[in-house]
Image (cartoon, rainbow, N blue to C red):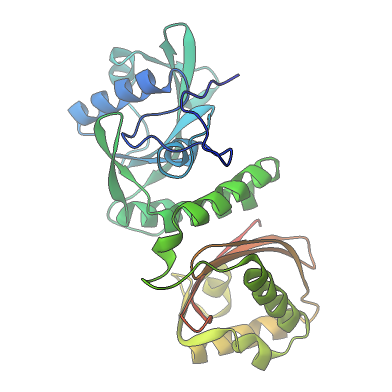
Length: 304
């Protein structure tokens, strides 16, 4: 069982350490050993997953340390051995560290490019920020990209779905101000659910005018389905007129389309709708709202 080093606050949630210290016993030593070796070797990486959540969103134990490698597919065995790591048998992207009798796994969760932001991890690295973790400066995702990556993880693995969606809600609450501007207040539960219910009802009625009433004129949508339906390689649809045409094609292509709302998460002028369609495919849509409560940006993620 993992041990949490930092106490919870009065609401029962762990507060991230202001100095960027990791919570789980053994992770501190393992992270420092890897990060220092990577810095010396000029290896770029980005911290993600539960480790990022631990230092940025809420302190909580995590089983391993997740990283994204930048511009390379693996780590040199001699480099890792010198840092105290050994490759885990039958797990080529996992390295194990012995922290005074406690083993800690470091996992290469993904490989990203710094030159071609064609995938979600590469895009996240393009937008990455810098944070000090255990006294070492490292790249970390923006909270917006952390939310998107967590939605992708939730869609890909049903066993982790509840945990990933809980992380999304915690991130939206912890970084509420990032989604709005000064003077704006966080969406209430009632407002978020009312928006979600109206949005789903409009889609289930196949009423294009009602659907479009939720979007601003300058809206931008990012979706892998858009890449297929409107021949947009980057999956981007910009502007309400183009979005309407895209939605019209979708309704025509899937006359049986029906959504079932499964969960709603909200922050300051941002909302995440998690729903299933008539085929059982799960979708998580991260939406940023204008001061008028209309969608100005949406990123759609699918389970398959």
